[in-house]
Structures are given as structure tokens and as C-alpha cells.
View 1: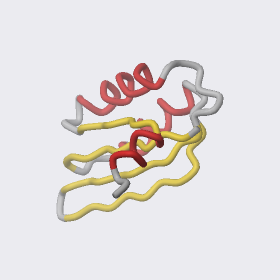
View 2: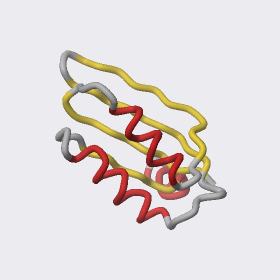
View 3: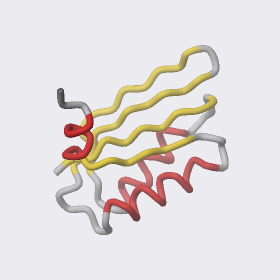
View 4: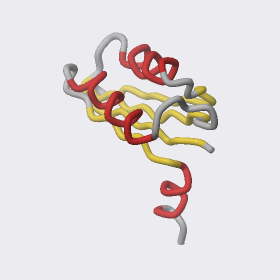
Length: 89
């Protein structure tokens, strides 16, 4: 089982560190991450293995959102099955 985690907003120091800390706290193993900065806009997509997650995915999502909200960032956590279904033709 995997989750797709996205974070978007104005670039700042420590965004990836905050996201990784939330994942580590709940035993979500980061498999891959890509990020880019376009001008001042930060965009990140992370793939995490959630097989051994210590909370439900909605709790992970809520904590991820709270972890970056004070920086004006938006975070989304989506189960890979939902992500795949949304992007299937």
C-alpha cells in the first residue's frame, strides 16, 4: 500500500523536513520524492509506503496539513488506489 503526498505553496526552508518528520512519526516510509521551485512557488510530490502506518490515512493527512499550514502551504495525502482511479482513462 502506498500514498501520494503533495505539498504546494510559497517556497521556504524546511518544507521537506516537516513532511518527512510527519511520515517518520507514523511509520510511513518515503519511497520517492520529487520537488521543484518555479520562481517562488514550491511543488513536491512524495510517494510513501504506508503498509506499517501507525494511524489511519486521514489522520496522516490531517497532521501533514497542520505541519505546513503555518507556512501557507497546502498538503494532500491520497491512497494510491484513489489516485490511480482518478487518473485512469
